[in-house]
Length: 53
Image (cartoon, rainbow, N blue to C red; front, side, top):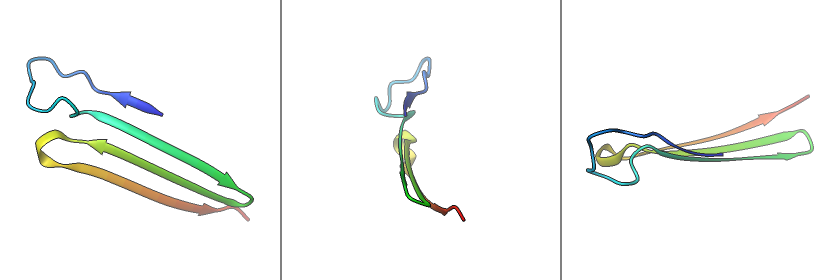
């Protein structure tokens, strides 16, 4: 997935609000990664692994 928040009246960081994610399934394992940009305060990276049994 790829998304972007539309902020009105601000131009401090053109990548602020950008988010991207990826999910993979391999047998009983599931891997998910997501990244969101928060402009001047930095980025959020999220990684998860699930096992289905």
